[in-house]
Length: 138
Image 1: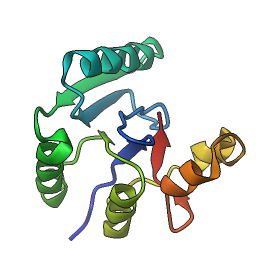
Image 2: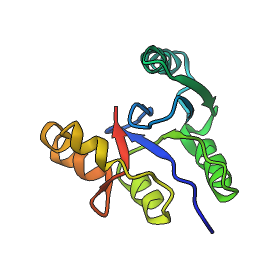
Image 3: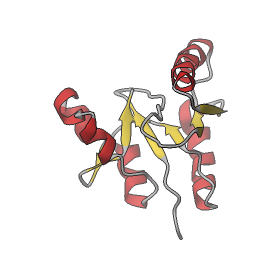
């Protein structure tokens, strides 16, 4: 099965994606930040992204603390129609999707922005799979 690559963002506990690392003008962002406060945070990221001249296509998935999103994401990846970027936790989820070959290699951006120099070592490790940056910390 050929996997389409997706960009993933991670943070220490819950994450939302940022896709400035992706060289596309229109980006579908799958996330499960749907409560009032979470939606407000997503709107800030969306505004910042769109201020750079890009278009954010919101693909919010309600319920389950990410469980519903994971189920839908697996189905979309399996049929070759993944969103451009996805919110998920760092560490095991990044490593699992990395093992499946479903994540985009973000090394070029990570090196250009000197992530290794500015991120705490534990965060740096949790967003890489086999030495490749696979997630964007937010």
